Amino acid sequence: TVVPLPDRRAASGGGMAPPPGGSRGRRQPRPMDLVVRYTKRLNRDFAERGDVDGANGLIEAMVAEGVAPTLVTMNTLIKCYRNARRPDGAETTLHGLRQWGLTPDGCSYCTVIDAWGLAGKPEEARRVLSEAEANGMSDTRTYSALMRFVPWPEVETLMQRMAALGVPPDLATCNAALNTLATAGQPEAALTFVEKHMRPSACAPAGQRAPPSPDQRTYSILLKAFCACGKAAQAEGMLRLMLANGFVDVLDVPAFSTVMNALVSSRPANVAAAESLMRDAEAHGLTPDTQMFNLLIKGYASCIPPQPEAARATLERIIAAGLTPSIASLTSVMDAFCEANDVDAAAALARHFSEVHGLVLTEPVYNVLIKGYARCRCKRSNGVCHCVVCTCCQPNAGMQILEQMAMRGLVPDAVTINTLIDAHCNAGQLAQAWLLLESICIGGGGLAGRQGAGGRVHLRPGALQPNLTGFRTAFRAMVRHVSDTRFSRADRRRRDMEDAPTAAGSSDAAVVGPPALSRELLLQMLADGLGLLLATLGPKNDESLSSTLHTLGRALVPNWQAPSSTGGAGMSEA
Image 1 (tube, rainbow, N blue to C red):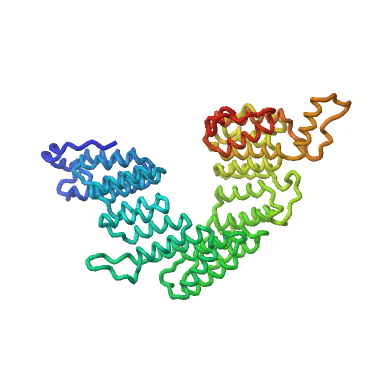
Image 2 (image 1 turned 30 degrees about the horizontal axis):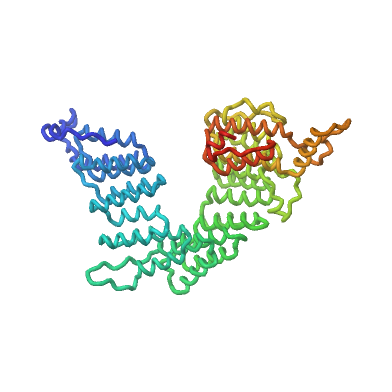
């Protein structure tokens, strides 16, 4: 909503109220000083965190004191709506500026365009840009804002619109356009863009401004373009070519980090090349930061098999360089040990950094340990896995870590719970997985008495909100159970026995492996789980989950027919 206009007649006739007793003779703030103070507070206390109610309340107090907002003040309010992801409020404020005697500028339109783009509605952002063009208020800021949210083929179209209206692009606009091309993994288009719009040696025609010259960010974005499409080797080659041609002054630590990340993210991870790039950065006078070392740790954790000792040595190099390891540094090394099936070493490392280096252990540290107990990593560490039902998964150990988190006053998040559900599922404990999920959703009921349910999990009310990932994990585990050959053979035998006389003493006990859950119990789990999902989250338009439910239906229900609709409606039919 738009803040109502102040009574200008009263403000102009009466002036400022007299100072209270005891302050007579002091210099009173000028109106402009008060505007600046209010605007700074508006930005600091409300706009940055998107507190729309607080921001409007402050402007009302401002008006009550007889101080009229300026364009900067109202642009800050538009920013507040943007950060609150309320683009409609941002645009309403924009259209109400003239009531204050204010004329919107490029910043006003830029922020509203950004608000619509962040809300996932680029068509609305385009509409606002057209409005700015029609009102003669489009400038480089408005085009830069829209560049972030358009498909990469539209970049050149926007550049042509700017040229047609006589708006010369600046460096920020060009880098925004380049970033769109890079994010889309279009390095060739990015290079063509630089050649066409950012020619540093080109002489501009008389009367025209010279095109912007590339800066450090420009070259980092070009490297990002190669990395985004999986061309890590080409990105490395381009970076080394730039070094050989004396482009050291335009390369910075983020540029090297971008290429290093691509190298360690490739499969297999090329940690040797990443180490070499870090040495080159140091040789050219750049000082590696913690992030660069973290990328090396990430690479060692991604190797097959994982190299946890090399990752730990890199962590020690961070300390030796006088840098402070981050939680990400520690958790990445811990993850390397967990990938190598050595959760005890990961836990010992966490204790060491807590006791010796004073690093405060937060929720991500415990999540890594729970993850270490959640999945079989035989294949990652040994190259082969012979598990029939995973014996590496230890959900009970994960539950003990959950209790340690509670004792330390830490709040488990969605990652914590989804990982625990995954641990139970991978260990073949479907009933316990559903019981845990139910404990989060409703704190008791339907699934508690199911086969092998075990004890209930008690969580602080309101500490967690269930999400779709946990349900996907549990339903997919049921699909794996149904698809298992032992279960399929046992189920076929049960169906055969239903159609033929049963021999005395015959049973399904001859099936090798852990006892398979009966089709009736799985059907009950499916019904209860789906009911829990609908009661907690409501129908969800999730094609992956709907497909999983249909797969279960086909496997468990004779003459199964898929629902006539998909998404949330199809889920309700299922």
